[in-house]
Amino acid sequence: MTESPLSPVQTRRRRLLFRATHRGTHETDLLIGGFVGARIEAMSEPDMDALEEVMELPDADLADWLTGRLPIPPGVDSPMLRAIKDAGGK
Image (cartoon, rainbow, N blue to C red; front, side, top):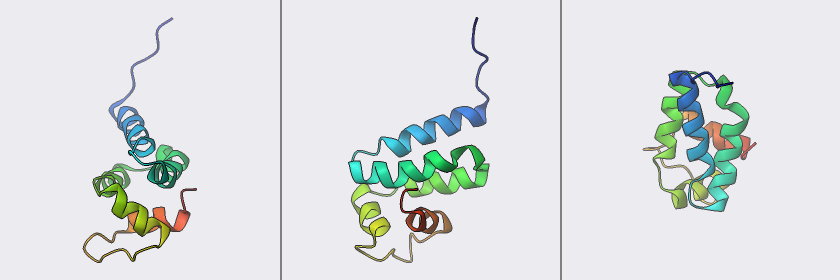
């Protein structure tokens, strides 16, 4: 029995989840991966676009912003980044 092929949206969700949980640092894997894992199936295309923008940011900066060690700079502040910070990886 063969599995049916994934839709483009399902493929995108799988790729985003993989990227979110394989960031390169354990801290950001937990913070971003936990958030994405709990929400990826309900994310719309615009949500996924916003998530991709966040995931383009450097890990060290993300870790500082998401843990509150440093404030999120206005130039990168976004509703998605705030949602991830507010969720604390959950």
